[in-house]
Image (cartoon, rainbow, N blue to C red; front, top):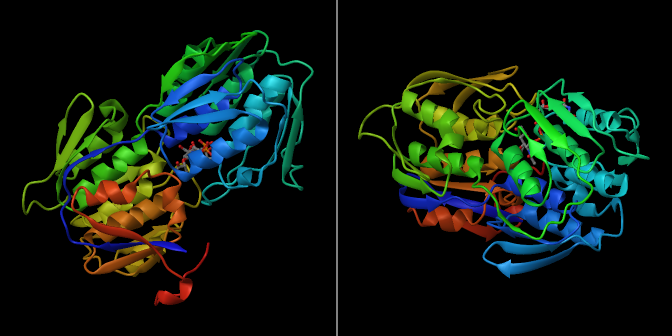
Amino acid sequence: MSVYKIHGGIPLQGEVSVSGSKNAVLGILAAAMLLDGACILENVPDIADVQAMLEICETLGAIITPLGGGTYKIDPTNISTHEATHAKVKNIRASYYLLGALLSRFKKATMHMPGGCNFGTRPIDLHLKGFSKLGARGTDISDLRDGTIRIVADKLRGAHIFLDVVSVGATINIMLAATRADGLTTIENAAKEPHIVDVANFLNSMGANIKGAGTDTIRIKGVPVLPGGYSYSIIPDQIEAGTYMIAAAMTRGDVTVKNLIPKHMEPLTAKLMEMGFDIFEGDDSIRVTIEECRPIEPVNFKTMPYPGFPTDLQPQATALLCLAKGMSRMHENVWDNRFQYISELQTMGANISVIGRVALVSGPSFLHGANVVAMDLRAGAAMVLAGLVATGETIISSAYRIDRGYEHIVEKLTAMGAQIERVEEDASSCQRPLVEV
Ligand code: EPZ
């Protein structure tokens, strides 16, 4: 079992470069399965979720050729099955994008229910409703007993679809299913995250006709052929960038986070400035530092769909709030149970109470090292950040969860002065019984 071991108390210095966006590339890999020709993807992060998605695409018959340096040739022309039933489908959430892609390509799709981080119910009703509006029929949301989704359509026709809830996954999945449908599809109340824009831009570069991505109304005019044949570079990962900005803030260091899109970071940048941090924006970088001895001010966060504060930075920002002088609130508005990691921060000395969807954080807490668990991907990142400031040693188990979304995290943090290593340990060697969740 792999763990991360961190000795805290070192202010991070220098710079770190952000990798390609996990949540963009996973949608784009599914979108590539729609093409009638090969394409080249650049700036693909070397993370576990991407490796899983590449494996799943290969089991469908796609030919994936690594070209080195995060560049891959993706050739879907020999895909021979509409069934995505590889075991890895259950390991990641984004495998469900293959529903829209395979439905679009074959007018039918079968796959296991997806996996992903466990923070409450993660329904797919909006995805299935969208497919049904386009003319598909099959698994009813109430009929997922055997854990397999089966959908089929004689024909996919453009439709007007209103999403009851702003959903990243449903927006991308319906966009994929509509890309080759007959006629115009309109998605109202669409999610506007940067990764949705990236998936739409990728598809358009390969011959699709999608307008309005990044707004709450997306129009997709179906095309009969998607020739592909081009290269596309994945946008920088907004959440990885935010994680390192918060790492710099928590350790009271002086770090320039490079290869990011400042506009994507505005929800976090604004809050860091409110907390007293000095922020210097470049064309594709943000420097985070703070005056010596200046206290970190308490603030209130509310997670919202983009351009609001991203829920995927919620655990990391909550760890930062532990260091603020006074009472802060973290209001989680997207997921119904995304505070499971709080118990791990409390083990390290944090003073936090959770009431429903609000975490009340009283600080500053002087965090100390402990044996903790990465409860999910972003909770795991929060534990790394807490370990960077805690006195003594922090051991984070279930390290594989962090590997799902952070490329070369040990190398990147070590380069900024952190004392972090990844080691193989058996469960018996940690004082606190490791709880597998
Ligand atoms: C994506 O998950 C991300 N995952 C998540 O990031 C992120 O937390 C989430 O979007 C919100 O930004 C990927 O992109 C792979 P949603 P997704 O559909 O698509 C409700 C990470 O850390 N909903 O936008 O599953 C749902 O319950 C991961 O990288 C329905 O009601 O999220 C939630 O309340 C963790 N019915 C809200 O919408 C549906 O059919 C937003 O969910 C679908 C969703």
